[in-house]
Structure formats: C-alpha cells, structure tokens
Length: 125
Image (cartoon, rainbow, N blue to C red):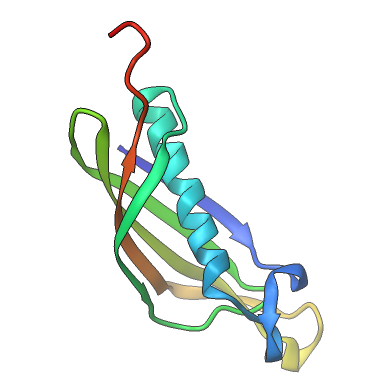
C-alpha cells in the first residue's frame, strides 16, 4: 500500500533566510502521507505514535515542488510501520527571475523517515 502527495512550497512555507523551508514542514507532509495510508488501509486517519528515524538530506526552498511518497512496510494488530520519502521534482530558480523553475531530470531525495502509526480498535470488537 502506498500514497503520493505532490505539493508546491510557497513563501508562506519558508521559515529561514533565503526562503529556506523548515524541516518541520516536511514532517507535516510526512504526517499527511501517513494519514492517507491509514485511511486507505483501515478507513481511519490513525495517529503517528513515533518516528524511528528522520533524515534531512538536501535543502528545500519556496517555489520547489515536492513529492511525498509513503508506504506501509509492516502491519500489526493496531500498529503500522511506515516509510516516508520526500523528493524535490521541480526546483525554483529565483535568481533568474521570480517565476523561473525547472523540472529535475531525476527526483532528488531531500528527506526520509520511518515510523509507527496506530489506528483505533475497531468499534465491533
């Protein structure tokens, strides 16, 4: 089971100098992908219980487009292990003009994480 979210980082997402997007924004997107996975698998949003690992690999800036990819790797009674990856697929080039951007030849891994989500006990049990 997998999920895919594509989103543009806006100036509202920039938190640091040079329009750098905070890692917390990517964590929010990871949470959204995990929520979609739980809905698809269990019919409920579930909740993130813990992250086992989080790595930020490359910077993300306002104007960049990201793909957030998620998949369930293990299913317990109420827990689900998930793997999440964020790829930059379009890169802004504001130094060349306010609306200049380019599609990357290959998606660039900017962050990844693994963690555990839990879903509620079914009401009929």
